[in-house]
Length: 281
Image (cartoon, rainbow, N blue to C red; front, side, top):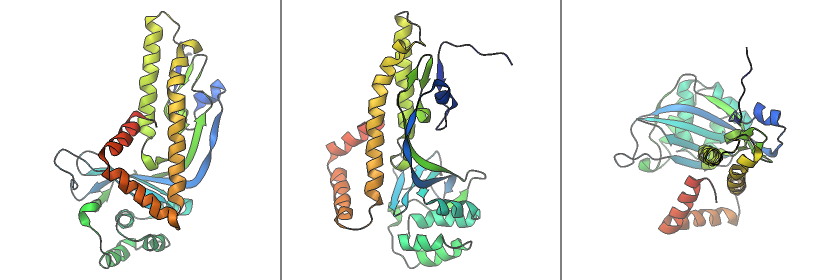
């Protein structure tokens, strides 16, 4: 094969980025001792939102949050953050038992879920019995699963990582190659899209001013715009993870009260939504 020559190499190659290693850029952070279990699932209906709208659901369990993120039609993406041994158990289940566990994660108590994860099989029958004795508001939770897409169940370790810089001579990093965030706030995609938009702007500026797009000078604007924003967001989400890891004491009530206040004060709620959409705080 012949070599490929370019003025700028963009590393969008994930957490263990070979481009980042090639450029000699250090990435720092820590592991959460949690795994994210993901899958594509089909729900029994289009959800409880108004026509043309979709609702994402998230519940904070003692071992981590579980979320269903809406996709077109009746489909959704599951992201379940949990202990390594629980991730292994979930991946070992049949499709029927796996779907039952996802339903249980939004309907049953944390104690029930913990027990169900000790069973090697038979969760579907056990969940049906426990649901019949558990009150919940149907329109406040996702509709039940009807299927799990073949080959979609997977898991990955949850980590926080941040590169010391996003640029070097003729190299720019974007997305997970530059930063890896806990999925509880669903900000990974927003961060990556923000990186790409800022890098495009930096390249356009370099081109219109006759600069070499691969020189560090041309890329400094991108690094300055995105590194600090992403660093703040990484810190906020890391602290949210630690906050929701506390399961007893006055902090639990204070946490719930704070979220209720944000939800009721429309301008404050819109502020947080805009910050999240923009990729930073």
